[in-house]
Length: 221
Image (cartoon, helix red, strand yellow):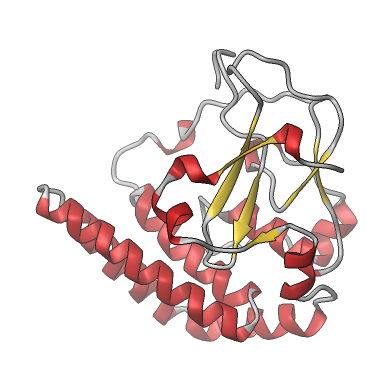
């Protein structure tokens, strides 16, 4: 948290349905972070460092994303090449959440996060897993959007429709990226699962944010 009162997240893991599982510090927000490193699926973009050689090999961030999920996508592609993602308590970053996204007239975070997550799943998961994850994401996000519409917030349904349309429009480019990523990957989905980086999905974790929190002390480097 920007004022130093607590930790937002210390990285995250991903499951086969494309849901994030956050890593948090143990106990109260003010407890210190362990100084030892811990393995991660992805790091937060506001506190991420990457070797320039690896960044160039990955062709950088997906420039179509603009904002949200771009760091997870970058880390995901790095893992597929055999790189490792390590969290460290020796460096602390204070970041005002969504600070550069506060201006009016921009697309909603829900829209951007939905469209980018579907794009990332389409590129990075093996075919069978990708089809299942996209189906689950679209079904659950549509249910959520309809629920919000019933409560008087129809923009969520509009966001879902826009996110699907965006992905359909950019499908040829996504397919080209997918072919490159899948042809150069050195680590399979199965290997990511066996290493504990790609988690087994559950409906409970999909609906309950508290079920998607992992204490950093339970992780090993």
